[in-house]
Image (cartoon, rainbow, N blue to C red; front, side):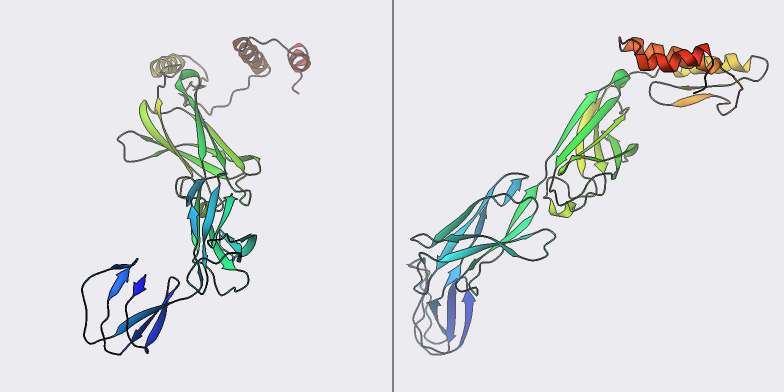
Length: 345
């Protein structure tokens, strides 16, 4: 930037490596940018402006937004007293990571022949600010540059029996933040609906430090829907703009194709009518394939003695049959005493 002639005197401001001095002398003042005259405006009276180049340090981060585990570069130029790049200057890179407790020097570099420098291969694990300082003259320091680190979340949707869904979300995040054993609430919103429905409450698991997984199984609404998982993610405010950082750390969309519940509502009603027509103390409870509990006098207690053991045995064997599996020695050690000698243990 070139600024026209004028006499001395007045105030000085530091403007991006320039000192602009405003004087009160008369004369002709013309302003030019990059060596080209910026206009024909002249004044025969008024303040004149002149510029004196002072040393300075510039800094830029590229890219300024990265995914977790990706790299960025902080580069710039050190300008000497003559107004050109200063070769051989020793500069230090200072880092202040979220929650921004203060800067620390992490690397050093020497400027090239044109005064430029570059700190490449930087891998910040959360939102981070950088400054570059001239080691010989620490008063020469760049403006802070920020790097946003987005935390990716990988969600996997698995269809189970009867249209039930299991959603598992895995997030890679800074090891500085502990996300283990946090209560997670799962909300589902049907397409076109205004209100969400709480469908599950689970707990997060940090499978290894810096990798957290949360999973839930539920029956979705029929058709398109969105889901979100909310848990208290420590440091979420410093983990970018596309990953965690809001009230709910995981969001996604899917399509539900739930099958009809078994037994059906009509079948349960028929069973209720049958039981009500029997003499004596009666009642039953059933959990259908959608997890809904229903029945007649469900909390009535009956003394069934060891009859319940036969029911448990049949249920266990049916489950093995569905899985095409046989009895193990451990299974026999429990089941045979239960049936043959009515061992309650």
